[in-house]
Image (cartoon, rainbow, N blue to C red):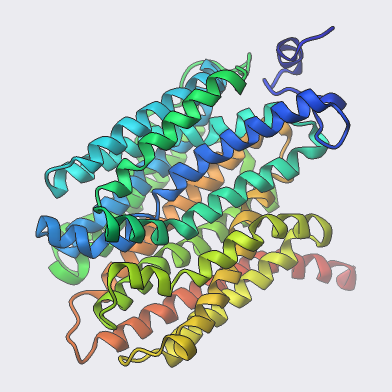
Length: 488
């Protein structure tokens, strides 16, 4: 009888078409159970690393006081993770294809646990920022390899379900991070935000040894272009630096101007390098697929708004309404609850009625929620009528958007490109996180008591417009398609 390994070798792209015996709905009990275990482990790995994109947000003020550092400096605790994560995701997918998805996943989980421990024990902010950057390197190894391991186990007809579950876990992790971080900060220490990853990683490694099966792409060779990897990180890094430092140093400061100029020059340099090198860090040919291109642009816009609002709301509750860390997280928890409840269902709904309708609904509800914050929230606390409704609306918008974007990004790609397509989409999401946090820090600045509420109103307007822009990007191709018959 032909083994999975033999079929993997024959498939060319390193994935296994597990046939009916691997399809959870086709009666193969043993293979179906095994596939579910791989899905659980892969999704748990993705959950853990995406959790760390937001779990620090709620402890932002606490860490700042602990290290006696500025908001602008501490912003790099968040941005260092997101920047390195975004830059390394794509080459990590290539590395996993060549050297083995199980091997790279295992290295990623173990390294992530080690760096998480280093973050938790960091004696100062600079050490924490450095450890976060290293943590992100291993996080990037986990994401594409985890998805590739999952796809390896599922028949082509069921892969969209597996991708939906995996994407829903990633979206739920980003949404529930602040609540989990608040509980740890309130009842233990902010350091446990990082240390909690260690036992989770140990569980994944223990079960992974038993259930994960090795696979690789026999056609993969070499490693992605190192210079391209540096350039893809340099563009958002320089841009973030200038956006964060601009309000403090002044927008005409030579270093701020140099950052903007450097980002402007580095982007075409990255494109040129990508076209010229034998092993580019990003396959630009993928962007010829219209849906892939549009979804990634929308992902960048929506993620900028999502990650920015997540941090902004927690800071507002603590600095303006003077909520404790735990109370601030619980006050915002209704949104993540909505995300967790609907995330998986929205991917199924999108497969029935089309992803565009679901994403447009998500953009609309998100925009309405942000506008609700901007038009109703004032200095005096009024959680029931002036906060809860808009938290529920933005939560609905997140649940309708993030998991569906993950699935829609790879929907039109060949199976062999699922992993790299998902890596690129996740990279765009992390770049959005960098921009969102940077925009928030830049707009917030150092407001006085008299102006702080008005400043947050501006922030909410900006994030409402970004969410609306994400919806427009997704609507334009549909409007063009509908216009063609009328003009023909």
